[in-house]
Length: 341
Image (cartoon, rainbow, N blue to C red; front, side, top):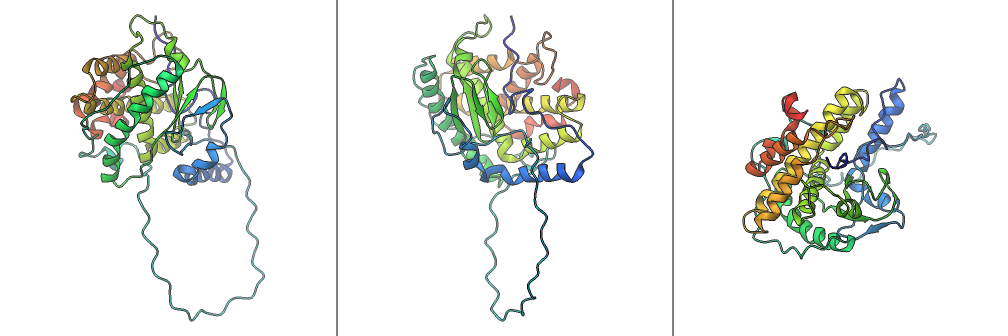
């Protein structure tokens, strides 16, 4: 039987889809403009929203959220000034401000990170502990793998003059509120602005002859979720959310097409994460199972919502990322419709 309908992506589908377009243009513009400000700087505020049922394992100090939906807020109109105009200052002009650092680029098919030249760096080794399928054991395994993945991707982002920050790992064992909304322990892992929310019991409980418990399954899923982190850091995730909004909503035909392209790109980036690890860093059987696992997930025929791409296309894109280790080969935004069905 096929695995549960995947919800790897940045949103708990059906929880907070991007809002449909309405006539209230100024309010919507304010909402979208406000989330741009959130990005990398609002992590502390989001971290405070997690309740005690989320085990924050502290890989880094960042927690944020991915789909760019936020509740409307009101802003008081600026009041005209009643003070007298100031006399011209005779002070010497201050020194020019320090140039801003790397910034995300909100683009899709023409994103600069998808131009030739960027890939995950090879590392010499990655000491993964023996796999224990309990929540604590999964936590230890994933936490050991994350620095390896971070060390592979950080130089590529820096070379592209894009921002970088470590991802935060949360182990979910009970239903909890998080910046996306609600996460249940029986759902698959998801990504939310700077954080991976890992539902440990859901993976340990999977019963599928094509997807047995194996360390590679966990590494492959982690690589996919980290692919969303790359999308978030580069700005592609934000651009995708904007495009879905412009299309009329996440669940419109165009919105679902964009969602599949987003998910399949994360799968392709996941393949890129596995490529450097295959050069002696970890056993090859772990890599092989990770690649196979990606091809066993996706939109099976029994699922009514086609938002992740077919298992065949997931297998094709993870293989493409793995064999090429080139971000330019993961440009799902420019791919033919059949490759992202």
